[in-house]
Image (cartoon, rainbow, N blue to C red; front, top):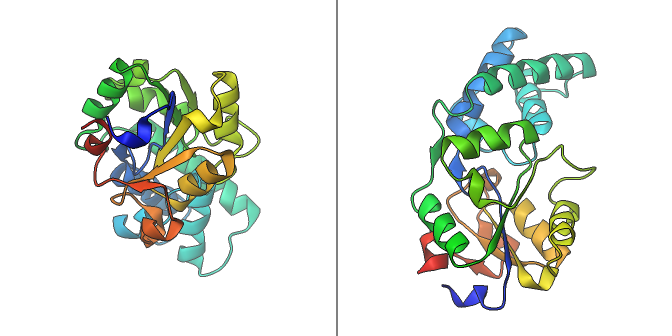
Length: 222
């Protein structure tokens, strides 16, 4: 195991851009939602830079792009409901687990670490996606973007999980691909580990100054 895990008990993971590449399915959901409300459809690459703050913000960014202005509340709600319907119908059609993700999760679980999933994705999608990839049972706790009053970059979800599992933040690690993961981890007193291949709105993750950057999850268990 990597030396940064010495003395740690809890390892919390982000989902989109960390364990899975979900952008192809998210893009289809966004495209179909905007088509339904009569607006132009963005490319997959554009959607990639909008992911990370939850479904409501993803839809809002897409609408703002299509309108070149902030969307009105009614349009936002209609498009959001359309997105949730279209994405929910096939959240695993094009989504892939990143290389080494399953192997690393199994190795960490077998080594005795408590694993948690803390994502800004709506809670209803977590279990179907993790079950699809055969890793749901490895996680002791899962928290979605709508599970609590606040989501990342707030430290609340991380502190909630640590408190619920009775594990000190100082014995906890947050693994993610975006500045929101690193900001939440730092604010919660977690050690932060970043992956450079995720979404992060097109910015280098180095700018967030995580405690460690690894090229892949394999480095955590090698």
